Image 1 (cartoon, each protein chain N blue to C red):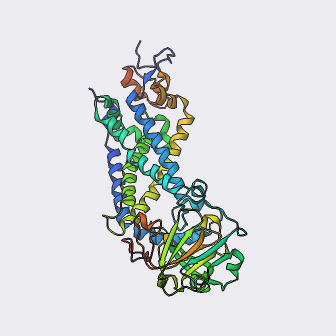
Image 2 (cartoon, one colour; image 1 turned 90 degrees about the horizontal axis):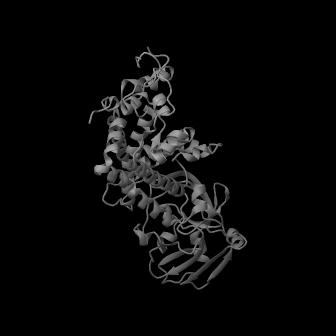
Amino acid sequence: MAVTSAPSPLRPSDPPIERFDRTERVVHWLTASLFVTLMLTGAALYAGPISTVVGRRDVVRTIHVAAGLALPVPLLIGFAGRWGAALRRDLRRLDRWIPDDRVWLRRRTRDTARLGKFNPGQKLNATFLGAAILLMLGTGSIMKWFEPFPLSWRTGATFVHDWVALGVWLAVGGHVLFALRDPDALSSMLRGKISARWARTRRPRWYEEETGMPAERLKSRR
Amino acid sequence: MVMAADERGTPVGRRVFLGLLGLGAVGVAAGATVQGWLERTVGPIVGRDPTGLGALLPIGRFRFYTVTGGFPDRSRADYRLRVYGLVDQPLDLSFEELTKMPRTALTRDFQCVTGWRVTDVPWAGVRLRDVLDAASPRAEARAVRFVSFDGAYTESLTMRQARRDDVLVAYELEGERLSSDHGGPARLYVAPMYGYKSLKWLSEIELTADVVPGFWEERGYDVDGWVGRSNGRSDEAT
């Protein structure tokens, strides 16, 4: 039988595929906890009605600064050692865009895109949040330890911090919504593995790479 | 290891990443100018936005700071303002007695030392000078210390600063009685200085021989908090 000539049948017995290894999951949830802590304490420091309810500005600010300084640590440790091979590989995937990513970005042709491990939305989200970690750390540090810097930098840092924070709320909010709408994907960030069916239909290029088997051919592709 | 197809594409991610960092650096350098422009142009629109969604944008809004747990809440009926120290006539004023003193209205910008600014804020209250004079300060009183009923916040001014025309014991903001989150029933409003000098929830005024640094001054802010001439900042004067 020529396996490439027809859609390969769904094989429910196919073993699940590892999507995120232990290092990636630990790094993800530590970073996520820090992000949520920062978003909530940040909101309490920034938004009038929430400040009114929470108060304790000194304490909230101390938590916010500590969480901010800790934010890049899980990622850095994750990247650093032998345990970070999968994380480093996924970082490369998030960096690299293939022609099918552009096909996916056009709504009209989205269904014909044969994606790798990540879709372009995930790539943009990761790129923005990665940059946001450094931007928030840099501008937050200028806000906290402003004395060595030129006069206007503190206002400029507050300005950047405010607007990037707005972006972080939108990006993280969108990320959580998409995760909740896709329980398989969410569960793979908890348990590591995802069904072969999910991989084959949603990320065919990645499925082929992982299993060495062809994903079923997509309808509108010759 | 063999690289997968999606590991060999164009490195768009790092370009976007570096672009964002570059934008951030430009924002730090030029943000003061852009923020000032936004406060002047968009700020007034956001301030009148009836949906309240504009409040989510970081423009032209008061940010509420407290130094203790929660916001202290004291009704106007329970409110007292004590004036004591180096005076011949110590006072213990009720809110009603305070509002019977000559009323002064003042519309000025409010500038926070952390950068945000609210333009053309209408304040009303009693000139601090009038309150001080009612207590008959002694000649040796060279400074004034303020205490908040939140139990932690203190501030201070020299007698010369305290007697300026644009320093109020404010009890109205934007035409309404001052709410608790803005420092009501009554707060200090020191128009020419950064916001931290305008102590909220004012309950005690002590006349002293020397300036006693307040809560924020002990944490590094300048005692003389002139807008544009202190704390290493160059804001336009308020």
